[in-house]
Length: 604
Image 1 (tube, rainbow, N blue to C red):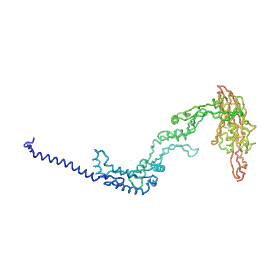
Image 2 (image 1 turned 90 degrees about the vertical axis):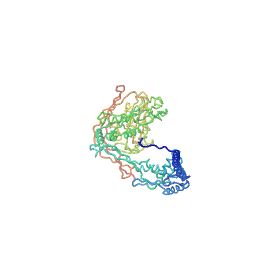
Image 3 (image 1 turned 45 degrees about the horizontal axis):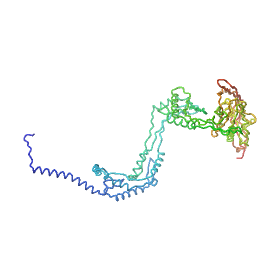
Image 4 (image 1 turned 135 degrees about the vertical axis):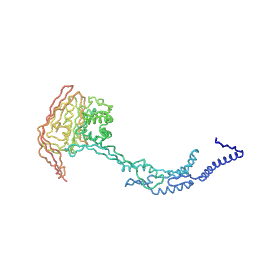
């Protein structure tokens, strides 16, 4: 207590006066805000609190007044008929008619009128305090067909978007004989339209009745690579130069292979990751499209009167390339090549599905499996020759040979003439190239000869062509051909298996490829062809020009290509159970052959 200071006791009247003053002050504190609030509420009775819709201030307007003002602004905005979207020097328009744009002014005014009236009571005062400081702002409510602007955005994206070009590793040669060089292309940044942002900008312009072109937003897509990764990729690619990798596929009727060259392997590389996962997937997916197939049930319909099989479909396993497993194996093999490890081949991993009906179930002749296959190609054949190959293939298909019986090609093929549907194509007669019925039948006899060899069957009769024919060396070596011309020369082979055998031929005309299959029952025999040789090669004679009345005068068409004369041979060996059951050497002697040109002598 301060010395000399002494509290003075209030008198009752003084206490009463203080109480009254305090109560009055309290009433003033309560009444002033209350009167202010009631005045504020009265001011906005059935009117909008401080709120702005789009560009229109609705404060203190009635709902009817507000709707009229909004309608006026909306009509004014719709009068411009379209939105404009601009990117650099390009301009797109989005018409309101195409959007089917409609403003819902009733819903808009309802939303605006609810501001300051819909809040919970505990938030009421704070809401109105904020409204007095800053009016609320909301867009107009509208309805439209969003598909119209999505179509436009897609169209714009097609123009604006630039996909990032990843750095690429490539093998280049200045000329065919120049050494290979590894080049790293650094790639290029891309560009992408920001669809979500543009959609929001369109919505904002429509909702706020804003005018003026919209600047289309984009974002860069950046290449992620550096000089170090370029150097590393080039060093890895150089280790693949001169190397190759074989992909193989084995199934019941397939034994195929593909070779990946150094250039193809290098194309699969990715800067920074050795090999590009997407490129590997794409490469294998394309291969899978060639390979994948459903299981095929066998069909076998034998005509006892004709002694031929009239309808035949071999049973085949369904195949589906296992992309995940194969991609992993291929990636590992490619990396092993870079590390100088020895890699011979990668077998494609396939999932197999067995057919429900096998060949053995649909016949009693012992024909249950593929025992031999011959193939050939005939690129460059004229249309009539292509036709004849397909027709001859059709004629030998279905031929059935009993055990111990000889297959006679000329007998099976029958009459080869215009009467049986053959067209005139170039054939060799007496050392000259002439138009004759059935040119191309020898493509089928040659392919059948190869199928019989593959099946390990004894060849009873075979004669090589007098001249080397380019068609028969497109996919194999010289000397594995067989000429026929009724009644002789002929092609014959013996069925020395314990069951019937069936000959089926398929001409894939678009590919100019022919396959002859022999079906039967395997007795375990295995064929090998060895010691192939070509010698005594003599140069071709001068070009031969032959008049052709079917070609317009003044035209020249090459139908045969020069070939050297030569002698050829190969050894044919058939084994079963480790023992040789058949040995034979086939010889061919070919005269030199000139390039043959057909000179048009017909009407122009």
